[in-house]
Length: 359
Image (cartoon, rainbow, N blue to C red; front, side, top):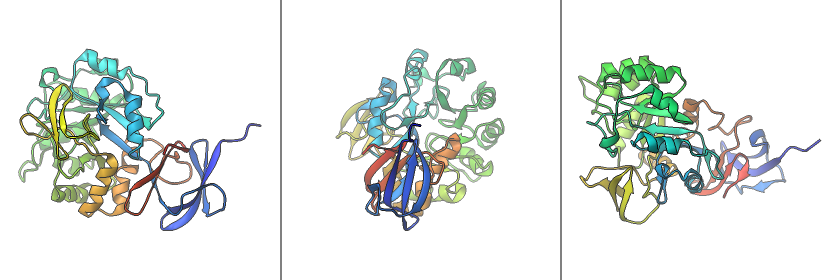
């Protein structure tokens, strides 16, 4: 009989105690008192690998280039072990080409696509190309391969019916780049939407007489993505969202774009010109585009803002895993062995994906 592929991580700090973690066939098979054999973690923290459900690219590469494996390899070096390649608002042909790309990866797990548009509002388009915004079309969505999540503005005529059809078909429908008021957002959640795309950004502000999508997500107990890079959302707003949603429904995202990891300069993202300067990436009109942060950077920022360590990690691992309904995001027996090892300051030291050491 062929022996099972396995490895042991010893001296792994988990819940303030040292353990050995036995991995078999890419899953955590056993967590026991520390033993003498295996890869020596030397007392480093062992955390679940991070899951970024909203990232467009990194290091000069973009999902729209269809270079998914190259991006996945770079993301893995930053502690992201699973990723939804996120598209920009683009033509049908461009989106079809990208979504037909292979999801095979030698870096982080590629779990399927997040289509951020084209079914969004021109009023709240943000850093999306207005020329390609269109009314939601379920037949168009079905023609794309491997789509896991779709961002929609539900207030546009025809889009509410799309929300219902997409949710019933198993897509995760997220409300974003939208002018929807509270009542419309609540109706969309009742139709099957279950998430908000980068809450606070590209939507009406939380007003005391019309709380919009933000208040609807709270009242309907839905998930919400938050860009926690310290620029897109202020510290008080981050902490308010945390109190409203809790770590079970607030999901940290990077929303990283092509210039992330690069030096200051002028770049292209989604067909639009952007300028990176002093850690901020902006459009020509001065508005923020996506971020240049990694998801691990966002976890660190959340902790810096005052969110408890374990909750900050959860919101970038277990919570997105629960939204996606995947067997990841928890360091426990039976879960996928996607793990990161860090020091006490969350400086990344090692990455394991499916039980195999990546760095």
